[in-house]
Image (cartoon, rainbow, N blue to C red; front, side, top):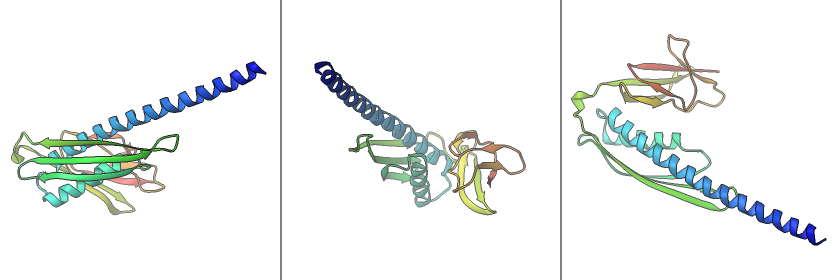
Length: 186
């Protein structure tokens, strides 16, 4: 009986330790993901939106950050600076989520991107995503850069590059060399 009791207590301690490890790992993964997402998106917006208004660039910034972060979390985005004329984009992001044990947690980051080149030196391309022939998303981006494909509409299997048999999945990276039109595949 004594051995059974020791075994049960040992098992409970083991389960508790595993839950603690998973919680620590979850926070670390979320922090790394948030840092990378905000850094990438601020640079993409800075490079790709030089000819757009500050308000349009700010909307693109918040939309792209929300697209790239997990949907099971609450995201609060504060755009600290978005001046396309001066070449400055700055954002502070807080992500609130639930740990596997049910408790809530949060991670935060802030990033600022400053342009080193003048707008005349940058060439841009337009990326258009269409769903059933209508524009689903549209971006002006920097050519020669790698971008992540937009989220797919519900029920779609992937994006097909117009005029080619190239299929792109949501979240997959691709190199932008010129204007690109994608159509959904169901």
